[in-house]
Length: 558
Image 1 (cartoon, rainbow, N blue to C red):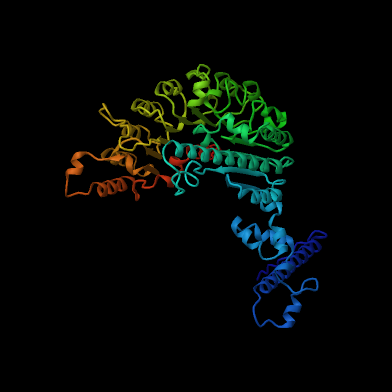
Image 2: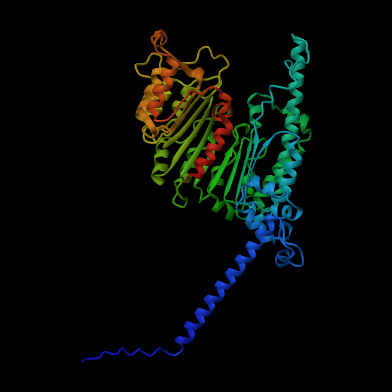
């Protein structure tokens, strides 16, 4: 009989000692974790404050000789708990005690700060408190001045004050409007100063975005030099704002995102020169949108653009984006540009020439440089002949937004867009802000096919279509829904824009409105209804704000 014996191999010297030390270290870590968990459970039980707890338990959970409770939690633990809460809950939790209130504005809790302000004196003390607490360390700051209907409500002749009608009533109304505008301007300047002063020495700032809806009054022609001279007679506040903005740029050490849109007298043609070369070389997004720069002056020149070699997203006035800039962006030392947002405004077109805009060859070179380049165009009251010059075939146009007050978009323009940009177009917005809703322009007049239906048929990537102020026939709307189906994620058409054929109205057995809703919902594969209240959608009521926000998300989506 054979007997096999297993002879253990001798371990190398020191192996048993190392294995034992590892087991001891693991056991100690586990014991430390258990102790920490027991301590944390005790703290949480103390926070609950369950009735009937004996003095022995309270004594065991005492910290530093005091009874355990919310005030006795370490600041690090409170900050860690706050980090899981949304901003409104943090504010409510900070009302528990002064210790928690001190922990509320710990820098790690507020890396991003997004503020939407009404241009109202009541906002100033709250803004001052918030910016005093967070302005010196916040990394991402976005401030929007919210739109308000300053031209209606409160103080007008129709508010029941019994103002006389006729010439005297018009004079009273003009005086009241003038007073409101002056108050809005004065408050606006104070709020802007409050924001800029609080971040002037912030060297952690990485994203800085400002949007001023004061342009609502600019479009109404109310912000003339006369009003500015009354609010700021010597121009001291305007100069102070401009100097603070340049100081922020010169003090920045980590800035990678700079966006300023529709602000009043904040960015000048010399503002970007305050940026150091190191910051300009690492900047990834630059947005300078202001259509009120007088004459032929621009906010950025071709020479200045050459410093921004790492720019991936750019937003400018279309008249400022010249052929020379397109050539600079195609240089080998620049990274490929991926997002380009252009604002085409009738004010800029009137004062600046379109002769220097990029031609089709420049757009081809840009597309070769970056195959992922996409363009977003916003057009305010642009004539059809000017749009025909602007819309070059090689533009990789992904989004286009028309907003008109005087000049309407023609069916030929819509047809041109559907033929040239069928491979790229995803968003199409058509807005006509007319006062008389009795007769909207019909894009399908004198045409065999409706241009909007052709747009839905040719542009296979179309995911958003919004229309107001143009006649949309019910049967064409059904055709659009069926052509794009579930790929059309958003279809917003105002109720007053929809019209029905006489045959549909004459049929007594079918409710045309109910039939339209049913057919469009079936085509889209989701419930649909027309927009009943235009005030509920910012795309129709606040085109500037909508464009600015969409431009931000468009640029971030890289």
